Length: 280
Ligand code: GUN
Image 1 (cartoon, protein in one colour):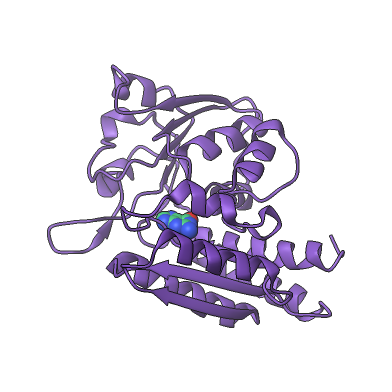
Image 2 (cartoon, protein in one colour; image 1 turned 60 degrees about the vertical axis):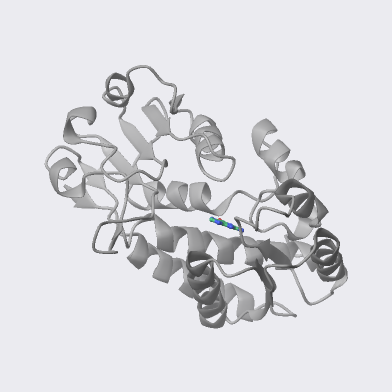
């Protein structure tokens, strides 16, 4: 079994991004907006700041109170849309329940939507036009490519259908000429479906969901989830120790998909900066 080492590839990508960024007339700028006190989101935002430093980007962080109103948040987004030195805007999700995520995402200038969540970018992905790709699926495609894993002609099964991961992942695999199935909570026999997969993507958020009897011998297994076990340690959806015995390739948690998501965000921000300086 080969470990798909996202940490190593992410380091390599960030080094390349740093080199390209330093050659631009103006360095890329990313604004990260966090509303409320979700501890996991806090950790993500801190790591994004470090990534920006590593890549030589300018970054701004907005930590807003839980009580922030919809109007205040949209006003901030609109002011960031107008800023010359800000190329990317990321509003950390989930937002507190009183805020309307769709409206906030919709307020981001699509040219600065480095998460790829705006309907304009989601639509461009659907019809195969250039835009911004959501970071996790884009990072996973980079990881498959790095290890020489072909998608064309393969059977790919995506478990999970979120707008952030499952749906865009399915579209990127389809773009890569895989035959794609999307499974979800109402799929009658999940195991039967997963066993067909040459490439299995688990993106649900339930520890122990993917057991070895659901994995075809020699499959490529990608674990997107970030769960915590009873000791508070990070773990994915895949029973790693057992699935190791069957998979040909497997992503660890942590050190697999997570670092790739962050690297893809840096790549998107670089791309946004190039486009906004008419260099891409
Ligand atoms: N919350 C979980 N993943 C993501 C992500 O990729 N982007 C944003 N903005 N929020 C998230």
